[in-house]
Length: 355
Image: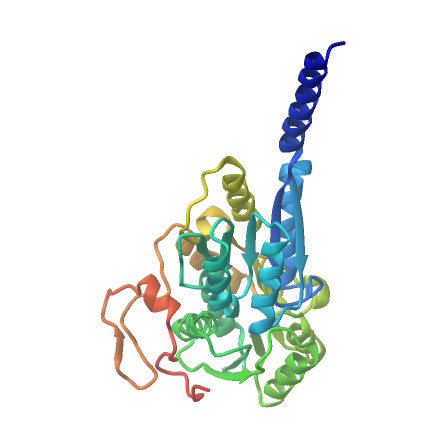
């Protein structure tokens, strides 16, 4: 074999190897979580979405995650390391990661970033979220009808817009069906701390609260309700197994379809920045079966849920005043996305002071 043939064969083998390597190269997908994957709530549901990406694309993707990452310098460090490790797209799954996402996205313009529940974007950083206030409004209706003491309560994480708007819509749903209802709010300043969450729930229950809602990530407040013989709601996931006598329903976050879609866009080169807000009518926001309630409460809850799903009812429709009595929404006026994303006030009727 002459030297030219050897060179040609060698080049052919190298070309075939390169082509095979390119064909087998996996799309790398990173996830950064604010809590542990075993929280049975928020992070647990995001990680289910990650696993659904693996199921959808098999050996075409490689997913990886870092859990329990703080919303500050730690998140920027983790995002940077994921980018350096070759991620093609990174999902940052908590509100407090917003500025870190934008900072790291500037440094890595060829990597796609997705930030959950935020409102800032760039050319390679998109937003996504779910209209979880839809399920929360239904929970409020149930709470207003179920309370015997006219005292309902809410275990809240941090005073940020997504938490405050859900407190508001929960209260609006309850007050619409029970004008005498009052709400007590306990701020625990953590997303996941079962001990603090449970202590806060027990304290409010001892003050007469008989329906407990939460915007924290463990089942602990619901377990407190179970132990004290009152009612509550699961958060982000169906938590019935933790409180079979107390859970009335639960909001269920369905992130998988969005993750599958966006990873697919990266794979076929069609990804663009944007602002997704998933609705009940597309299955992005779901609810666990209604339980532990009289038939008339279940019927009204189902009616409200159906009306929200069909677009006939929106919880933030005027007239709605702010806590200080000033007008937020006039008669028939509907809140805009920006108003919802920046909501930093309680509605009229909530007596607790803003933190």
